[in-house]
Amino acid sequence: MDAESLVQIERIVTTAVSGAEGRLRKETETLGATLRQEFGEKAEEVKRHSGVLYEDVLHKLDLVVEGYQGLNQKIEKLEARMEHEFLETRALIQLSYRQLQQRVETLEQRVQIIEKHLGLSA
Image (spheres, rainbow, N blue to C red):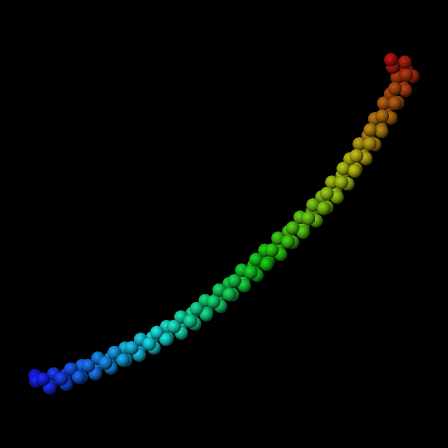
């Protein structure tokens, strides 16, 4: 092979390599842009999905808070009712105790009168 053929082959190879390098660079840039776009779309989708999940968690938390408040109100009402019933029961017991005390005192007085009448008292 002569020098001129070698120069022509070298030119052909250089042109082919330059063309392939350009095409490869263009394809790499296109692939990079496509990947950036797809990644951006996926990131937006993840953000939307996360937002939906966040809103769902907030909604469920609101339901828990409402339930807690409802239970707290029921407990407060029950406490108030029980306190009222305890006071009523205490008052009834005290009244019954006073009535029993009066009956015992009355019976003791009658026993003393009977004992005096029978001459049994000292």
